[in-house]
Length: 263
Image (cartoon, rainbow, N blue to C red; front, side, top):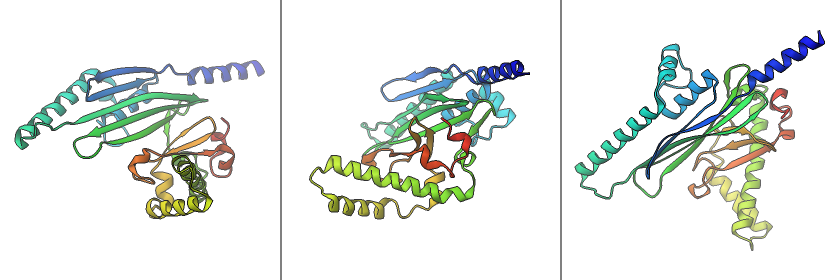
C-alpha cells in the first residue's frame, strides 16, 4: 500500500511539471508580441486569450477554446500590427500630423513554478500620443493539478480576510514610501518622512476601499512573500511606475488558506 501511495504521489508531481517556451511572435521598433506556451492545453488557451483578448473575459466557452487552440498566433499578431499601422497612417492623413507615432507591446514571460502553481507574467505597453504611454502588468497563476486559474478570492480564507489583508498591504505601502523618501531625500529626517508619507496617503490611498486594494491589484507568489502589484496612478504617481508591495508569508497566516502558505 505504501508503494502504491508513493507511485501515486510521483505521478501527481510528474503531471504538475511544465516546460514553458517563449515565442516571439512579432517585433519591430514600435510593436512586439511574445507568447508563452507550456504544454498544458487549457493554460495555453488561457495565455493566448490573455495576449490577444479574443474571447470576452476569461471564462472561455468551448467554441472560443477551439478557436484559440487552432489559432496561428504568429500570423494573428502580424495581422494586428498591420491593422494598427494602417490605422495610424489613416489618422496621419486625416489630421495632417506627420509626427504621429504609436507603439504597442504585449509580452509574456514565465515567472516560476511553485509546487503545482505555474506563474506567468504579461507586460503590456501602449502609446498613442501625449506625455507618455501606459503600461500594465498582469499575472496568471494556474493550478496545474486542479487545471484552473487561481484568483485572489481562491486563496483568501473568506470575506473576513479582506480587511486584515488590506491592513498588511497598507503597512507595506508605508514602508515603500519611507524607503523611496530616504533614497530620494537623504536629508529628510523622521518628522519630514512622516509628513511626506501622510501627504502621499491623502493624495493616492484614502479614496480606495479595502476591496479596491485587494481585488484590483495583481499578485504573485514570490520567494519572501506574496507580491501585490498596482497599476500606475492607482496608489502612486506615474513616475513611480507599477508599485510592488510584498507581504511576508508569516503575516498572511489567518488571511490566506494554509495550502498557499507552504512555499
